[in-house]
Image 1: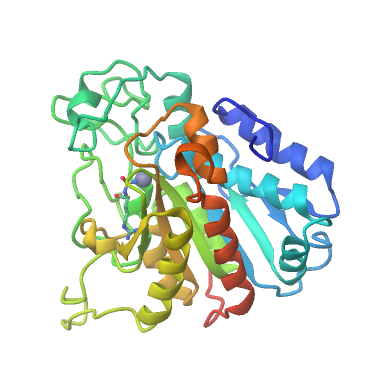
Image 2 (image 1 turned 90 degrees about the vertical axis):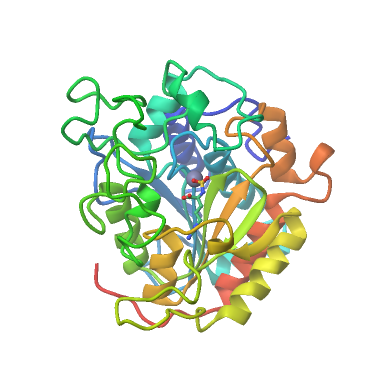
Length: 361
Ligand code: 0X9
Ligand code: ZN
């Protein structure tokens, strides 16, 4: 079983309750906190901080940040994030490896970054099978009632939603509904290739870098801690992606090719070691396709903390829950290929690493 014992997907209330439950189980070890910015619909976004003597004054211990559900429809991405929190809490004090890691580092888990979008997806969802659709399911999505396959946040731009104020999936013909793509709205290379300027598109970048509460929340979290490693979970394709989201020969704002990240060898090494555990393919993000304004392209280039996107699962946004369980633990169909061990390796890296600086929020 999963560390939490759950056997069905959580909705937004379940996530928030479980974060509170974790803190109630071990108040010395877990602190539930609210991020700075409420969502556009006024919801509070929560996370937990986990570490030995967690309520002690901030002591500069390095932080490993784990996130899920930037994209609303990517349900396993939140489940694996919160199960990792349960795993740490359950094993602290009995498992020496985890106990020692939590003495040296703090782990911050924000399982649902895009609360508005996720609430629509999980509560108003009608599931369809996307496995045969090779374009990410967009053709089927447009034919599907409900919001199960909603991706973006709930930013309403004039003319984008069918009813003013409604955060719907489907808008005008050919559109992808309301919202900014939170994974195109960060400051790293914002406005470059692989992000759309048009609000109806699936990868709409927003009006400007960090225009959205979701990205503001993560920017402020990363900017006020020593986040030496982060994983942002997505689904699907069994990938461990490392910066950057555009190829080294891409011309940057200074007119020169951006090149590979200065830490490419070490980024690759950690990515490869994680992929050896979960069986994913470790590669540059740009080898999937171009993206700009993504989470770790900002965080890595701003702070030097290593950041990775995990694309969980072979082929589904909402696999049957038993698959989500097995893929976390590395059992059954996923024997020897679990994310649990990959996450622990990232946490070990976080303990040893240092960021360049803490930047202003
Ligand atoms: O397009 C995305 O945002 C991610 N794929 S998804 O199917 N979950 O939407 C991939 C982002 C990869 N690029 C970077 N991380 N830079
Ligand atoms: Zn995604």
